[in-house]
Structure formats: C-alpha cells, structure tokens
Length: 197
Image (tube, rainbow, N blue to C red; front, side):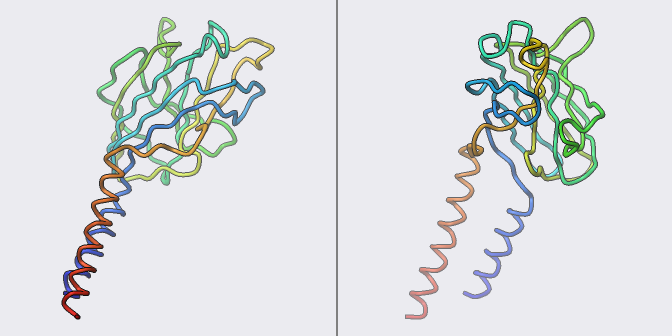
C-alpha cells in the first residue's frame, strides 16, 4: 500500500510540474498610463502546458469605454525564460507576431504585436486566436500579461497598459484535474485505513 501511495504522490507531482495553464482573465485595471476605464474591456483565454499554449483575445467595449479609435495593439508577456515562441494558427480580426520591447515597467520578456500593415489591428467587437510554441517548456509569472490600448484621446493619455481585473477564473479542465487528484488521494487513504483496521 505504501508503494501505491508513493506512486500516486509522484504522479501528482509530475502532473503539477508540467505547469498546465487554463485560465480566462478580464482586463481593465490600469498598470501604466493615466486613464482607468469603469469596467473590463477585454478577455484573454490561455490553455496549454510545457512549450505549447493557445490564446484567444476578445475585445469589447473599447468604443464606449475609451474612444472609437481605440485598439489593442500589444500583449506584453512575463515568462520564466527569455524565450520567444513561434506563432501559428492565427485566426480572427488582427495579425499576431512577436515584438521586441518589454512593455510597461520592464517586467515583461517579449510581446505579441496585434497590428500589421494597412492599419489591421484588434478593434472593438473583434477577437483573435493563435498558438505559441516555445523551444523549451515555460511558465508564466507575475502579472503574466499586460494589454496596451492605443489610439486614446489626449485627455485619456493617448495610450495605457492594463492587467487582469480580478483573480484568474480556472477553466473546467483545471478544476476537473484538481478534483480527480483529490478524489484519488482520498480513495487511497480510505483503503489504507481499512487495511490497517
């Protein structure tokens, strides 16, 4: 029985070490700039683990919260390594490429650029999805992501960087894995108790 419990603990620790990420975050808290909107204006969903992550960014309320010219031009990324991914499977309202520059406060390793030639960019009511593949496994750190809203009025400071408005909302897959692991631990513990009785 001890051998089974040790194997279970080892399996759970290996699962945790893959750093699976499944989250949807709402953006609207000012990190750098001068204009604080009254509510969230974008959501970012990220799923994946190891070296492959899938992203979906939805923009909403940019026109009503900022101005009709507002757009999301950049997502700054904070990871545990100075690696830049290869982008693939881009679909939606804007292109996605890798850019230099660390974003606000120098705490970010690289950025996803969401604007391209001929004025293509992510505006109100649009979404974009893509896959980022890193050369090695990575984990996201700190604020993780910061969105740069551009095209603002002079009174709004012309641009601003925004972070997650609240604690990340775990996806059902993450909660399912957690509950399965806890159930398995409880099952093994109850069997051990019966064996010792």
